[in-house]
Length: 296
Image (tube, rainbow, N blue to C red; front, side):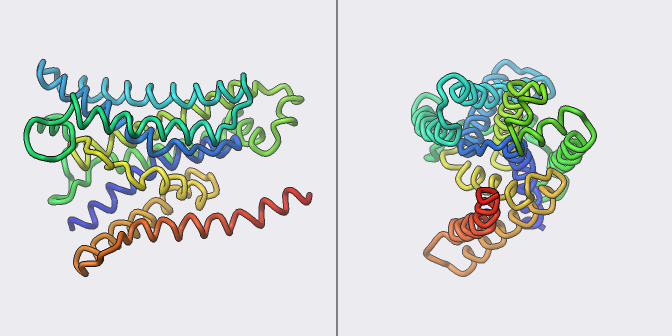
């Protein structure tokens, strides 16, 4: 029950971040800042909730405000990367990767310094008080109600791209930006909205991981989450509805491979090996498609 619940909890994180990655991919942008944004969202959420606990703010208002701030921070960072692309023609792929590379060591320094917990030897922020933690619905696992919210989000995004005018324009822009421009679409609105949605959903995934699984922001909790979320979006072919089963598949691979490694006393990181195989397989799947487009 513990590993089954942990797998579903992890799949909710992949659904949130994977939906954000899919939104960005719809516009032809590949976001490589996933891990940094997840780390940032988790860190801000943990620090704010620790502050709110000292002044005894009610759980609903404290968690809601922490999630809003986390989402806003992630959105602003990717909006800034998109702005660099618009104004300076800086490659979005490169700027997001550099941004993530800057965020991670910065937060590592903050956690190991002024925001480190005074109890224990773990490089982490103080643990969340009980009322700020998401209640488990399948004990002893950390599975909580966020799994239902993540599924609902994926379904709503699928309907958004299929049923709404702006969603259809977003997909058309990803296929042909020039056609969208000459058709009179508001291209800036499309790209900046996609960047904001991608950044906010990644940061929300980090905040959800803190409140629902780890209950503290420790260094490297983000490891693998961002890359796996990008893998989920690519395997799902940017379809939010397909993000749901793919997230469950990837999370089951990660969870049960970790269980196997733990019980088998393996000396190497099986999860990283599986992640590398998945990314390599995706690159093989996408390469022929890209060549066909270039030849056309």
